[in-house]
Amino acid sequence: MKKRPGKQLLELTVNDEFYELAVEPQETLLEVLRNHLGLTGTKEGCGTGECGTCTVLMGDEPILSCLTLAMDCRQKEIRTIEGLDRENGLTVVQDAFLQQGAVQCGFCTPGMILATTALLEKNPNPSQEEIKKGLEGHLCRCTGYNKIFEAVEQAAARKSRHGDSGSV
Amino acid sequence: MHLPRFRHLSAASFDEAVRLLNEYPAAGLMAGGTDLLPRMKYRLTSPEVIISLRTLSADSPSVTPEGDLVLDPMMTLTAVNRSDMVRERAPLLSEAAQRVASREIRNMATLGGNLCQETRCLYYNQRHSYQFVEPCYKRGGEICYFIPKGKKCRAVFMADTAPPLISLGAQIKIIGQEVRQIPLEDLYTSEAEKPLAMASGEVISQILIPNGPGNRGAAFSKSSLRGGLEFATLSVAAVLDMEDDGGTCSRARITIGAVSAAPLRVRKAESALTGKRLSKELFSQVADQAAVEIRPIPHHGHTRAYLTECLRAGTRHALCSAAEGIDFPGFPRSRE
Image (cartoon, rainbow over all chains, first blue to last red; front, side):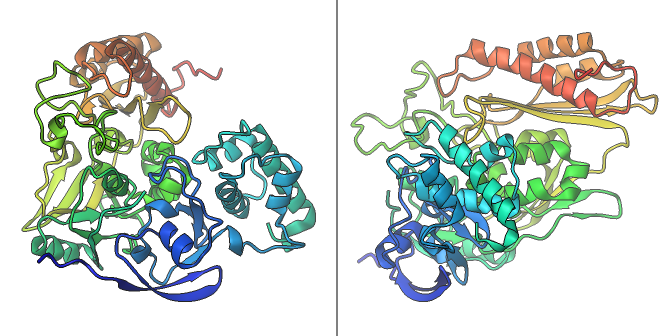
């Protein structure tokens, strides 16, 4: 009889909470976030790295959770859309997306928000070109992108007005 | 989309990876995973064991006493792009790393993994479970659905960082049963079904870029359908080494990517530059020569005629951009 690989123990930190989980070796970070931890803010789009919908932050850098094996996240710190610092319920970036109408169906939005958050943490005052480069891995089938770029600009402007004290 | 079942092993070093590969010869070696995991999701490959290098931390780039630049293959493409040492000594590699896919993928994908990318084809790289037809060459059959008259697999090697490194004369160190160092150019077999000249138990452990002359111009040019998140339609990496007088080319290296199962150098076009004074007319002639020298394989819906024009324009563009970096006051600048 063929021996099936069993579950393995995984320790990781998601949104500042430490988890100890038993996961299948073939499970991706995306599946663990959604199915084990119930963090369904992270969406699965294409599943093959072509759309950016499943973006989460590992450390400070955006990565694709659909192409990351959960077992490779041992001792790593992950931030998802649920774990962003919020003032009055929404972050500056989320608020800017709402105000500019950058959300229509909303499926790409968690990935867009996390990529924007990471972009503004590295580069608080990005040019149009830098915004496009920063969000190049994210597809949106509704908005035509202009409203998203405007939202990023608004978030950057509001952040620089409030100085570095406010959360992104 | 779910992955097939496998056993997951983490390697803590390249030596351990080699030991594990000997223990499990059919295992899949995974660095960033951005090329392997989509293929596994499509069930194009289903190794029973995955040896993951993803938790290995990469060494920072360093320079040997001879002035050669040493890169760790586990550097992410983001790290390659951000490194000041790479930008200073191999600016076209830095540029190429920046042009790969998207920011998220560059944060995961590694330089070594990019060099070992599997060849791609519009037909092959998809799910085949509901296609009740004979498998194509690359899936073990005897037919090509992309070029129906083809006698063999015509998948194309599309990694962006290989042409710059070949133009820079890079060497790679491979560890396995023995340690060997080969020019990166020799890593590629030109066989689409087995593009890499590496045995199953071998791992690239180091990438070495030899020190170049003081006066050198280099550029990378990539054409693609979209500006980002896209494989190359065609890429060109040009390096021009100059004589001390500044205006005469002592050696040129031009490498073309995404035209074949291996990145190809255009040696006749290169020798047409050697010993000549640079001019825009010369660059046009060299670009025409390159377009004659290579017969691009049609891929991803691009016809051969279109790719040949991309090759001509890309070569001319890369040579002009390379000349801009040269300390040579007589050369007309495009920005003036």
